[in-house]
Image (cartoon, rainbow, N blue to C red; front, side, top):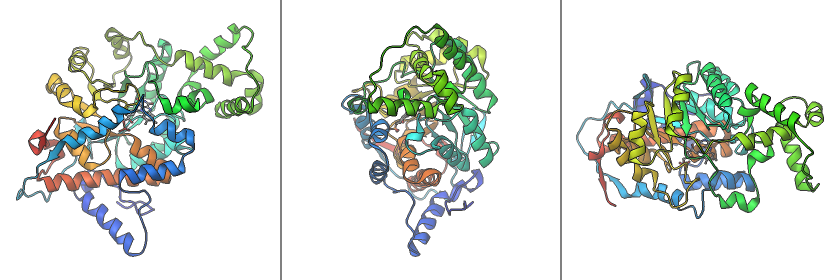
Length: 441
Ligand SMILES: Cc1cc2nc3c(=O)[nH]c(=O)nc-3n(C[C@H](O)[C@H](O)[C@H](O)COP(=O)(O)O)c2cc1C
């Protein structure tokens, strides 16, 4: 299938030839002088995005915790596994599809939840979601998205009615809010709830700290909250209980922040200014964002409220993976959150084999952190991941070329995956195992 702008997208039946189709589309366009919309190699993509992004936006997206050793380790870990190809194995008819939660997906790729995508581009959530939908890849809507989940879901439906979407949950300190977000996710067609466990407090992120910049405190990335009836009730309660406001110095930066908060708040400008609600919403969000007291027993609360598959994101220890099986969840996602939470953490890929061994086939293991191209996907699948989530690369593609950029980026990852799989002598992505790798510590 060729989209209006010439980007090849695909469905299950066409996935077999995506690698060659993508190559010929690019080379054919090159003959008449057209270059790809987004740089193909990740370092070039990151550089191009940096040129497009504001200083604070680039810091927020590219930044990680501390000295950023985990981020570096996440990507370096792939270099310790090498593919050893097999020859003469008839790989003409390739199959990239996988089974997950009772659905056949055309490829083993997911889009990781990324908050505040408006930093990459205005309307970024819907644009990235539409790109995922065009490829039939599950898009994970973040709790910190810049648009209400219903709007993102509608954008996907307009692209492809049954486009798979998941909802990522930050477990708020308000149980009622958790229940409300999950009910809304079900109502707008989400097919899984991804509970992120590694972020009950934000990691120590020097790039953002140096700029004194947290998007949420400027009213960005809190649209799931301000569109939620339970959250709005909490804001009203806060406003009626409020004593005299703390004095904030009136500096140009304070005025700009206030304007940003008001602009991002739903409803009319005049009413927002009169009510003082936008500021109260930001303060309420900062209060209820997460619950550091959460324990294994709390998962029952979620299980009682949804029939959707529950994915625990941020599981790195094999004992936690075993607990997840006992807790009756449906998948774990091995992830360092892109190194944004703990500096000096184990690389996600290094943690993957032990988690896979611990669950011992009882749950699918999903993976993200450090995936930069199709060969990385092959390595993660070979180490036992059922599916692999793309993170920063799609945020950068969004910054460089919007929806088209994300569509092209995803196509490139799949094309490289398909070609690498074939050249390795493996016909089905689902058949990959560690016999295709030679690994060194
Ligand atoms: C800018 C940014 C925002 C993110 N926001 C969220 C989020 O809202 N929820 C979440 O579970 N993970 C979030 N993540 C983590 C991603 O889901 C994923 O784990 C990470 O991007 C993987 O690392 P990589 O992008 O370096 O491959 C975010 C990551 C980035 C870079």
